[in-house]
Structure formats: C-alpha cells, structure tokens
Image (spheres, one colour):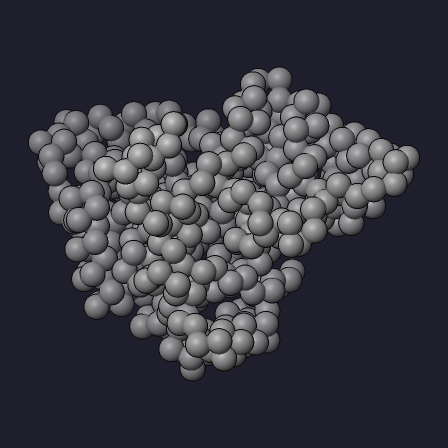
Length: 434
C-alpha cells in the first residue's frame, strides 16, 4: 500500500477510471435547493403523486398473494418472461416489432446504459452524442474512460451533416468510434425531437460506417400534441440497441428498465447483467408485471401526458411573460426546456445567486463532456405545479436581470472562456437530477 493522502489513505490504489467519478461542485447547492421554500426547476423527477395509490397497492397485494415465493427470490439474469412480453407490447406503440427473447430487464435504463457501455468501450474509444446530452450518460461514458464527442443538434434533433463531419474527422485522427448515443424523443436536456427524415438519414450514416446506434427512449410515450416519429429501432433491428424504462410512465422507485438488442449483443448483456447484479429486482418486476396485467396503464399514461402538457404550457407562458428577450426550446413532450442566456451570463456561476433567490435549475455545463454549456440552463417542468413554475420563472428572471444590470454597471462578463471551462472540475449529476 502506498501513502495515499491525508483524506483518503487508499487514494493511490484506485483504478484510473475512478477519475471520472469526480464530485459535483454544485452538489451542496442542490442540498439547499431541496428546502420546501425553494422552487426547483432542476430535477427530472416524475410527478408520481398523479399515480393512484390503489393501482400500486393492488399490484403489490396480488404479488404477495399469488407470487410471493417467486417475487421474493432470486430471478433469472434476463428478467421475468411475462414482463418481457408486456415490454414488447409497450414498444409496439412506437412501431417496434420484437421478440421477448431479445429483451433484457435491467435496474432502470441507466443500468442498461452502463451494461452496453461496459460491453463496447475500451479506454480511449469514442462515443458520439448529441450536443448537449444526458448528464447520466456522460458520467457512464467517462467512468469507462471513453471520449465523448458532441454532434451539433438543432430544433429537429441531431444534424446529419454534422454527424458525417464528426465521423470523418475522428477517423482521420485514427480514433475508434464504438456507438452513437441518442435520445431522439423529447430530448434530455434539449427538449427537441428528431424528425423521421433525420432518423432515417442518421441510421444510414451509422450503418455505412459500421457504428452501432444506442437509442435511449424514456420519454417516448409522454407526447403532448402528437406522437413522436416511430422509434429508430423500428427501422433496423440489427444496428440499434434500444433502451426503455418504466421510471417515467409508472414510477422510478421500482427501478425497472430494459434493453432490446440484436441476438448476439443480447446474450452478452445477460452475462453482464448476471455479473453485475446476479438478477434484476424480482419484486419490482413482479409488481410492474401485475400492474400491466390488471391496470389501465395506457389510460394512466394519458393522465401523465395531460398533466405534463399543462405544466409545459405554464413554463412557456411564464418564460414569455418574464423573459421575453431570451430564447428556449418548445418541447412537444417529455420534461425539459433548454434556455439560452444572454452572451455575458454564465449559468454555473449564476446558480448560487439563484438558490439564494429560492429558485434552482441545472446549469448547461452538466450536459457537456468538454466544459461547454455555460450559456444554457435546463428547466424541468415535470414536478412543480403550474403556479410554482410561474413563481420559479419569475424568480429566475429577477436573477438574470440583476446579473445583466451588474455587468452593465461594472462592464465584465461572468462566463468562463471555452478553454477555462474545459479545464474546470468535472460536473457529476447533482442529486435527483436525471
């Protein structure tokens, strides 16, 4: 054993990949933000209070009455067969034709993301991801020592020409691209949806370059005005691994997600699942299965859609009222809005003042692997009520306007340069931010 340091005697013994587990420098602020007087527009927490309690307790009672011996026991590494059949039915709503044999149940889709990354990534490999991308995915890729390269995204999703250019540049540098990670529906954090035309083009680009597509779709059924285009996996069942979850359409506490993969990848996913957790949560699987057997789960998804649409509308109205000179995305589903700040402001630097003013948000820097994002904020409308959303946006407007007034008075910008941002401390997900 080496000497370590004064805070951790094992410091010198850790694997190199643990450098990707750096603590969040905003974590303490989010602990403060959990106070009831703070309006949090930060965390992507589903509004589980809209789920009737009797639906859950009834499912639990049925499990304990009919299947307790199995539900409280170890299960198989691939997951409960009847649940996988239900998952096939759920995915069919987005045009996916699949077999339960190719579904692997996981401990939430985050676990599936980790397993896929473990299977494919060697240190130094490249993962392509949208710009910006999901903070939890960036953390997983970093923990396996992958290089995340962001590809330009606009209001219609990933830009195909930018994808071509990124692939060509990386190949010129001799780098190995293992997969494209994409959230095509109601993107986290950008709130945008990839058009059908782009889905086809992006898939063609990846096929022609031998690049796997990792399609992460936790929000796909939570559309407001019209459904998103059918899943990328519905177009190609060999070049796409599809990740799904019941966290947003039922409840995250059950920790039940899944991966749908081509046969050879599925076999390795089962082995990786067994090596990580022996078997996914049996009790959670049985409860979710009982819920899908007996409840009007499609009707409950409709209820969630209506609730989140009302809150999206409240967010749009409040931004238009209190921050009319700024720009933001206009999501047609999901949980999130991506706000662009005036050039002189820095979202991470402004956060302590915002929390002091009793409003919290997630700085854009959390959604980039390379230090960018200081000019953006992710706002979440899923959890607070419409009235709370209006109050929160009003408080945020006060913070932004005060910051602009200070800059006008003293004449200097607060946002770090791209170089200094790229050298700053790694931002890990704050608590309750998904």
